[in-house]
Structure formats: structure tokens, C-alpha cells
Image (cartoon, rainbow, N blue to C red):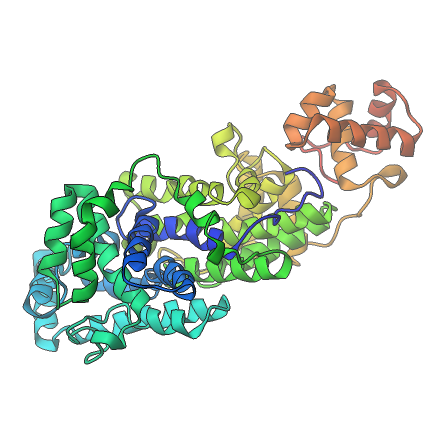
Length: 516
């Protein structure tokens, strides 16, 4: 993103939550767009069962938020069943109540652990009638409803989200709530959430079969009958070329714009819920965002870049929804395959951000690696975010180590600079922003800004305008403007003059250009 560019034009709450649902899909062990496809099915059924215009918007927000509460019960699920993502993926194939649910949980108890540990957990589940699991499900529902409230959504959405684990027959959680007490939007989504999986994996007949099998138990009979009567027609629309993003954007009931503080508030909600995937990460994304924004100000970046790096900090870990809690909270060394799953979060994050055009430029800040540049290269905004993330993580507890002191973290960051893993300019700015180092002077010779000093050093070392642009992640036009301003402020007019100026003021003493 170029200096001063804003990153919020054209975003809507529906766009943001639709993109966030892609991360939620990963936590369910489903391919991206599962939730959006389920919403699409539910909305078509809503048209056939008399859903009004207000209900259409409630249905969408109910669908995209129904599963976000899984971050709240993730520690509980992981402690009982190991890989929480695999557990949820398998649960779609069970009518989760009574003996079938208990048998399913017993089979999955302690997955991946020793036979003795598995037997102990299975025995406890049976003896306690899985009351601990019920508590986790209630936490899921309350969390999803809380997220809806923070986003300013209405009582129909909030109430519906508290009923996600209710059943038509009243045997769900909370016990005794069923039938028409469940909101219409949630009853539609209950069916669509399951039949989407069966249709995608086994076809129309399988989707109809599971709907009929759970009619009157999990599902509203009226909704099941409407689905079975029109299943081929409804599901035929779920072709590979269906653009669900365009479907959302084109729905007049979903045009709630987000900009400025409203967008920042919504991104903070997403960040907070992302961090709930691990008890060790609570508040991490907010902390990174604050530190990265402070460091960007220390570095003298334009207001638009400060805003962008702060927003990137809020969203940089959204891809962690695709990583099981059993890996995130593992106290020992990760295996090679586990490490690969953690590294895949960058790809998942990029997929989510790419879904929202106004926020897509943040990809360049969040992860420069796919473009052939590590955290020590790329745009200064990306370098700052990488350093802020590293410092914040070092000073937080992790399952395999206690939090480092500020002094130890500072030493570790400088080690990363020497190893080429982080940029010296970014680390300096982050340490100042964190209050771990005294501030450096805010301007260079002749009143040059830190960015202009950065450009001056590159020019002094022989970089062309295009090379300056590539190194700093800016456009050639912007690079040219910086060079013109440098010449105007310093009174030099040649590259050799620029080189002499840089040498005179000690700007070439370091391998890293942004030291002013």
C-alpha cells in the first residue's frame, strides 16, 4: 500500500464477516466457503418458507457467526478429544444427541494419546454424562452472541446464536429449548449447515437422506419438507462458478458499510475472537496492532501507513483458525508436520484478506514471504509488523516457555537482525514504541524524514528510482517524489552529491538504511 493510502473504502460488515467465515470453516475441518454455501442454501429455503426481508439479513449474520463460538470451547474440546478440528469435522456425520452422541465422544476421547489416557477420558465422559462438554457448548453460544452484540447486531441474531446447539425435539443445549422457540434463522441454518457437507461429499441423494433421517429430532420438519421438495433445484445452484462474494455484495439487505472507527472496532472483534483459539494468545493481536502502530509513528510513516500496519496487526493471525489447539498449546517441540500446519496460517490469512478488496493491500504487510522477501525485506510496514509480532510473542507466555523479560527479548530481536530474520530499522522502531529503548532523532540532515533518509541511503548506494521502489514496496512515482524532495531540502542535485551527504552524516555506517 502506498504512503497515505487508506484501507477502508467500500468495506461492509457482511463482507468482513463473510471473509472471517472462511477462517471459521478451517476450524471445522471443512473447505473454505462451507458456511457461505450453507447460508446460500438456507436463504433459498427461506424464500420457500416465507422468510421476510428483515429475516434475510438476520439469517446471513446468524449463519456466518454460528460457528465463531467454537474458539470459546476449543480448549475444552481439545482437552477431551485431541485435535479439535478433526473432532468437529467428524461430528457432522452424527445426530448429536443421546446414545449416538455419547458413542461418538467415547470413540474420539483422547485421540492421539496413550490407550490408558483414552480409557480414562472415556470412562469420565460416561460417568459424568459429558457435563463438561455441555458447559463448553454453552460457552460457545454465549461467545457467539457476545460477538454479535459487539458488532451491533440485533436481538434476533443474538438470541438465535444462543440456540445453536438446541434441537427441534428439545434434547439439545440448553435442555428443553426446542420447536418454534428456536429462531427461524437458526432452524434454517441447522439444516443447511449439515446438508451442505453431505451434498458436497456425496451428492443430492445423500443430502436428502440425512435431512429426512434427522427430521423432527435435530431439524424442523417444515424446513426438511421444504428442502426435500426442492433439493435438486436448490442444490443445483451450488456450482463451482457460483461467486458467493458477489451474492453477498448484491444483497440489498446486507449493505451496512464499515469505515473509520466502525471498521477498526469490527477488526478488533475479529482479532479478539481469533486469539481465543489458544489461552496463551489472549490479547496478542491487539497488542501487536498497538505496538506496530506506535513503531510506525516512531519511524515517521504517513498516517495512512500507520493505520494500515495497525489493522494488519489485528488480522495477521486470523489464519490460526486452521491450526488445531493441540498444536498451538503443545508444550514440547513441534513435529515437522505440525510446524507445516502452523506455517500454513500465512496462506489462510492471505485467503481471508483477499476476500475483502479494501483490505487486500494488507496482505503485503502481513506476509511478504510469498513475494520472495522475508521479514527483513519488503515494505517498511511489513518489517515493522514482523518485529512487533516477534517482540510481543517473546514477552508473552507460551506453552513451551515462560515470557521473556524485555531485556531478554531485546537481545533476541538484535540476534534476529544479525541473522537477517528481522530488519534493524523495524526493530529499532519497535523497541522505541515499546518503551524498551530511547527514541532516536525523528529527522535526518536538512530536516529529512526517516523515509527520505531511507531513500537517500539507497540512492547513495547506487539504486535507481525503480530499485528504490521495489526495495521499499512503493511505486516508482512515489520513489521519484521522495528523491525530488530530498534534492530540494538538501540543495544537492546529483547522485554523487547525495552520496557525499549520506557519508558526511554517517548514514552509510550500517547495512540497514533506516537508522535516522
